[in-house]
Length: 362
Picture 1: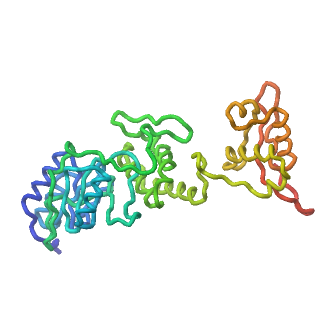
Picture 2: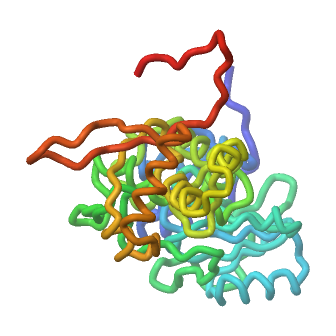
Picture 3: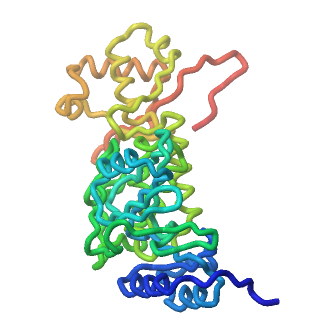
């Protein structure tokens, strides 16, 4: 069975593919908008993979992969929409008029990629090694054309997009445990640090996006753009990070930002019976330690007062600690020994015990 033959592409499309490949762009042979080859494990395919398929009629278009690029894909020829996108992302010298609208090209900057469809706009923002757009110069068999109305695509004339969302990404990514991720000589996050790097950014991005899908899209783009050897860090691994942080957001379980909330149970307030010092201390301890079950911590009245967490003197502080212990809202996790660490505590949940119910041994 012979391969289906399509309309021979114009010579200038083959020439444009050779030009783009020579400038370092990663290309794909397309039939319609479908790649004719697999490409996930190869950062840049050989030129003949695309050109041969154009010349023998199997491909009718050239795709440009967007590893370090960002394209604003506008699905309307409305000039007002195009001007609004250039206002938000910046003026660009590289624009393609597509059958449905426009492609605006930029260099991929750092930070979250906005989801403009969530705003009701006919605009998709594409970026990352697994994303691609149809190159200018393509003419499909049905007559649809992709026409360059700006300058020919070249990295030397592209600018980073200026679009900002509600968070400002850190210049040097830091993990939740603290410490800066060292990058390799080529500026990429090395193996061994990629997971923590994406975790740090997921925590930063999750409150700025509209959905788990948008969060995952941002993290995949960051993996492709900023991490060494991204093909060895699978989409499934990225998806697990996205799912975890989106679940935490839905559960109101994000505890590192100052404007997040935490849970206080009414039974705890009932047990303290209006003891305002004990209630204040419990509130501080819940905010600091309540999100980790069984977490051990020490209590230092002088240190907490210096840091502004409390304004209680030593006697009031001791009385508040005693009240929490007697109410069963806190327990001693490890006793103090001379020459060793301070006594350690952990929080407990208030509950009433029936005559046939006993606490489990610890």
